[in-house]
Length: 402
Image (cartoon, rainbow, N blue to C red; front, side):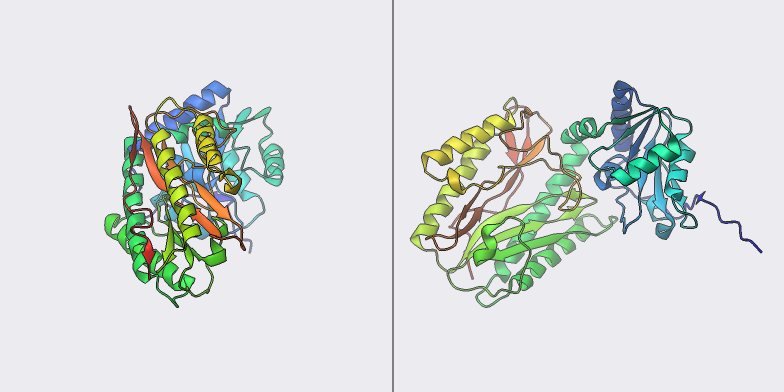
């Protein structure tokens, strides 16, 4: 007896709960359809975690399986794997179509089921792999494939009021994590123990503030000593010692939205060389925040901070850009690269953008004051300036601990 095993089916059960109101997703999809019309494409296939989450609210867990969001002039349909059952529908806006594992490339059959005979298809060129691009062309046979990722990124760079409210809440959660980390940082305590204290405090705070959300991905990088030299160095079991430089990095994740708090700290005492670097970086941080206002380009802000550090013979210790956009992103998906404080980014700051100021100086091991110094605040660009939504204090007066 041969069992009938379909390539796709719909599995909709439970009540729908989304990070934002339906009107928010309607507005985002309206913006995407305007992008599609301008690019001359009939159907958009969004495949990235951040893209699908932005337009539908559903944040997928790939585990080696492809996921998608197919948007036509009249439909928006998430394409998900059978292993997720009804969760993508409960947590997504619009329709949801499940594909099965019974035959290879059922994902693409599901996409074709929604896309129909579209001759022109918009994709995220910075996400679709060569392999999946080949399958798209083989199954859908489009006449033209257009990369709409840059335009979609520009759309995400401008935050709605609802997004800014969520980001503001995330910054407050990061402050909670920062205070928990400060309390846990003691001589003899391991980096991992301090990191867990900060993470647990933030997850409890998120659950209190967002009782109907899904909880995933919140993390802490707490670094000490030589481990502070890189901004993204993982946590270790190194024990804190008197005089250590510390780097507090708290990252709450709320419905795919990333916020951050980063602070330089020291254990009990600060030597003179370290204090000089710390205070210089704090000065660069404050100067940088004063530059963030509408009408100024990312490159111009970068050049001014460069000059500030060069005057103090410190520019040689800078290792990366001075800040970046916030929104649907994390350390393993998403990036609004068009809104970064770098020399090669000419984007003009506009009201509704959200950006960090995070200068970092890395002094090589073996030199007086060795270690990585970084302060990080999140600012919302307003009509006439910027609002700092980070509350945790920076500088030596508050952050000598243990």
